[in-house]
Image (cartoon, rainbow, N blue to C red):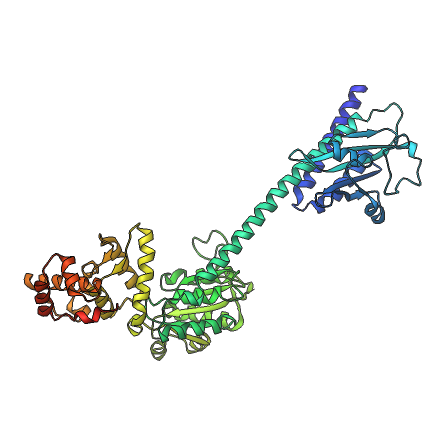
Amino acid sequence: MTNLANQSQEIATLRLLFEISRILDSTIDMHEVIGPILKTMAERMGMLRGTITLLDPASGEINIEAAYGLSEKQRLRGKYKPGEGVIGRVVQTGQPAAVPKISDEPLFLDRTGARKKVRKEDISFLCVPIKLDKQVIGTLSADRLFVEDDSLEEDLRLLTVIGSMLAQAVNLRKIARDEQRRLMDENSRLQAELKNRYRPQNIIGNSTEIQTVCDLIDQVSKSTATVLIRGESGTGKELVSSAIHYHSFRASKPYVKVNCAALPESIIESELFGHEKGAFTGAVSMRKGRFELADRGTILLDEIGYLSLPTQAKLLRVLQEREFERVGGTITIKVDVRVIAATNRDLEGLMEKDDFLQDLYYRLNVFPIHIPPLRERKSDILQLADLFIEKYSKMHDKRILRISTPAIDMLMSYHWPGNIRELENCVERSVLLSSDGVIHGHHLPPTLQTAEASGTIHQGSLETTLENVEREVLTDALKSARGNRAKAARALGISERIMGLRVDKYGIDAKRFRGT
């Protein structure tokens, strides 16, 4: 009979521990699990009252965090100092305590007043520490009826196990909170970095044209208006779109970019609006579209002039009603998305040919921003070149100190059909080719050195080529010497007379370099 009783007790203990484990796994919020755990202990252990206390490191006070069998007023009265009462002693020593009769224990204070109306000689009290990293952070205690000749050791061991489970749960939740806080801090840092990277001031250029673009970005960022960005390929339309988003109140929300020209016509609708499982061959599961992913944020529809008419019609509905259905679906999905469209195509010409819907054009063209091509703001070329030199010098571990005057002339005279993207590629190539810390004219791509590209006349003979190189070397030396012929001659290792003859031969005006 004794063995059967022991087995029954062990099974009951295992069931209790399993139930507590299940409660702890149900949520990450400790405040939501403490109450159910104490209630389960009362039901399965015959516990009259139970409390969980926590030590406040700031005040040094021990407070009852949660209780079973106590009123709210009684719970709030339960405050102790380390070493004060049974609970305070457990916190101070880190050792569990078992009191067979609270009436015989002078340390038992009954500060809550919950035992005033009962016979104290009929109540036993157990209290165990809750430890985190070997530090006592609180206690778990229980009242139970006193039973003559009944040892409290088994209940104390069970309470210790439960206290250990609570401590592990607290530790795991602390790790989770720390990780969540770290991720939130990292997210805030990245958001600030993105906002800083794409703020209008970081759109390089001092020309009137680009300052106008920056002013427009500042104005429209504070609104939810639809924006249409126009400009040739490579002018920085995506950069302007990013600046608008990260400068708006939606900066912390999703920013989704879609290149309409890069997506095949067969999947563009699914990409934009998503699809239901089985909507077409290969649709093995439901998939959210870009609009749904961008909800409460911003979507960039780049190269929008390449959309087909059926897709344009569906996009028009989204802009008008802010709703759509997934491909193969019947449920209408509402979205709150700020739309930014970009194109290098002539939308007005497409409308005349009935290749672009007029209604869609007017819906998109709420706030147009035109980005001028690089050839129309040549005063920005050197500033952009300096930026790219710094970028690729770090990337390729090169030390570039300056651009030679002939190279500057070539950069300024070129018409840049590829705009900023082409300039960036040219600078990276030049950085890689340079071996003396200077970007020379011969480091620039051939397109900048042809008659068609630069407007210069190339004779093609060896003599002309050598003269061009000699002219560049002489010009560079005079620039370094600030127009001083004698100093330039010494730097090149030639006499002043030869220097003078060469300067006169090529018609180089040394005075232009004085004061540079």
